[in-house]
Image 1 (cartoon, rainbow, N blue to C red):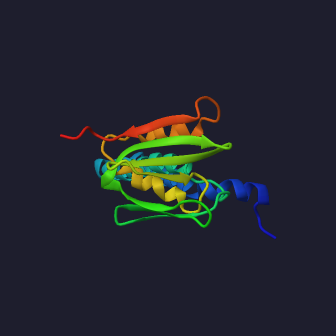
Image 2 (tube, helix red, strand yellow):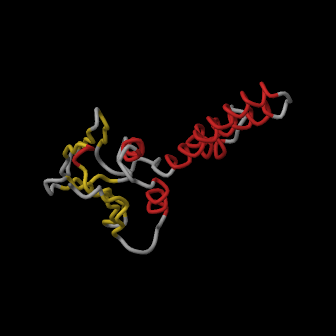
Length: 170
């Protein structure tokens, strides 16, 4: 028997990283308030690290979903790979991406990744390993992760949302 109710434990589990980041930021704030320029400097650095970690963790939180779709997503050495048993899978290199769209098919969101040669890869948002796409998308030039997070949080409205378009060639 645990000390925390199962409902609370289930709610806290996906937010562990965010809570740890907030704790680091609070420790930094506490250190900075202890007085003296040395502790203030150390506390400010620790606070900045915790705050940056909290922001990225919060944005990644939207990518964490229960696995409810078939397939497996891997991000390895600059390539996004989607393995599917019944649907079409594929591989696309991050450097070849020209567009990322979030589309809704049959009530479920899918990433539509388009490459420079016109090929497209559909990846269910609820596929196992899809949370790794957050780190991959964050490396793309000019992407606004806040826009990506807002598109994922939107449950009504258009079924096709363009979340990133690559820089124009040339």
